Image (cartoon, rainbow, N blue to C red; front, top):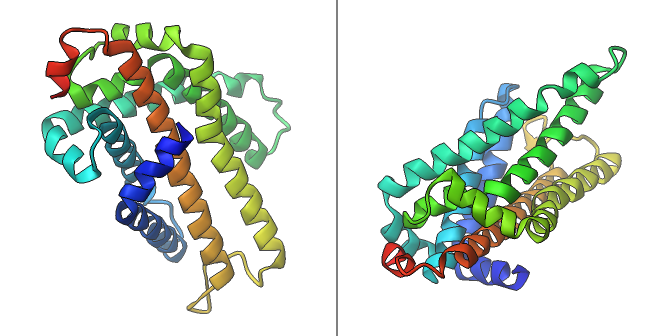
Length: 239
């Protein structure tokens, strides 16, 4: 699946260049504004990239062809289902606050909660992550269908999603920490001038993130195909 991921990246390199540049631009905007208002745009970008990758796997085509096959009618439900799973992961993770000691600092609390939410999110994706994928074809679109597909392949899917979602984040954080130790400033812009080292690190982190999202998308697309290709109606739905 990793080879397939790199193949998709190679065939659609311009899209990935846009994603990396877009991520950098949004990060610079956040730094200049002193806010994190671009998080919604970033989430949309990752979601759209995942949908394109999954469509490329299902239809064996480029992102351009996927866009023609999907259209708004399939894109909108895809994002609704993706958002629902993410919100569900946050809600399920909320009780973690009751287990944390009161003397724990804010930063540590946020880190623990974020880590717990990410693990819960990966668990949900392993079980019902093909629910959004089904919107690409319109076949097997119920939550029960997604659960049926996920349970049958839960453990290998969970391991691969951990590698695809968690590992790039950890590696990116380590790179940022190491770079901040040698850079003159951890900021992207210093006195109005670009901090080349930190911008390069940000570009690497953005690519790693896009690689992780793409790999996870390929994994879920393959789980979906494995669960639905036995259906006589699947070919017509995906056509």
